[in-house]
Image 1 (cartoon, one colour):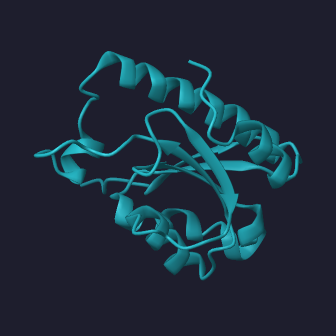
Image 2 (cartoon, helix red, strand yellow; image 1 turned 180 degrees about the horizontal axis):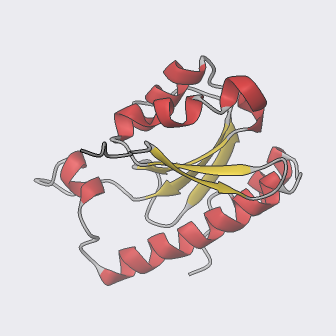
Length: 153
């Protein structure tokens, strides 16, 4: 009988110095998926994490380096697994749910309005460009000044 092979991440080598890691686990275990790459090859300052945030309207993005998890379970997991919070974060807004929708329902469901989905997709496109700029060597402060809290839709 064959054993199933399961990796807790998808991996894509972008260049000799950059790798993209997409955790395939539950969010609160995502740090384990990336932690195997940090000690050997990278340090926290070289990590860029893209994640959602309730604190921004749909599609708005914010880029910053370091800070707390602010209650985000994925960030908590990464901080615990790599032992540092000094990585770069690219937050993409999903907005806050309207009552009686819970936070879990909100982040795991499709957008209620097409306009919110379109704004979110625009924000993801901006996040993609920001990550390309960051791994291309641009300073965090310059990329943040270019993209923070802007939405072109």
